[in-house]
Amino acid sequence: MTIVQKETAMKAVHTASVAAAGVALSPIPFSDAMLLVPIQTMMITNIFKAYGQSTTRGLVSGVVQATTATTLGRTAVTSIIKFVPGIGTVVGALIGSGVAVAITESIGQKLINQFEEHGSVDTESLKSIIKTVILKKIRK
Image (cartoon, rainbow, N blue to C red):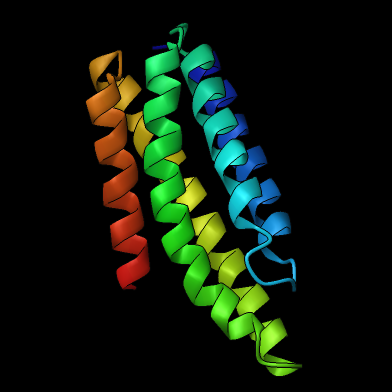
């Protein structure tokens, strides 16, 4: 793998993380869930492209399914906090933003590591990366 490939992939990760932070700052409960999925899916697609790999419909579908299930779980917690007027809205947005960035950044980093170490990523490996990252971040 080349330095240019890794830099391109890292740029995709950082761009997606910034976008995830912005989306998760929304004070409206549950508004970020549907926007985080395409941000993370696009990041993953861009990482694959950076390493010269194509993505198939099945792969993207697997990513969306895994990401959707875990994102909705994360969003439920922060969205419930947002229902508390005033401080709950602020705290929920800040927590949600931090979690969204941590999850997005970690998924991207682990995916890049997989490409760097193995040269490719299959659907099951990608699902495993996503689930592992999200479970680890939610437990914190």
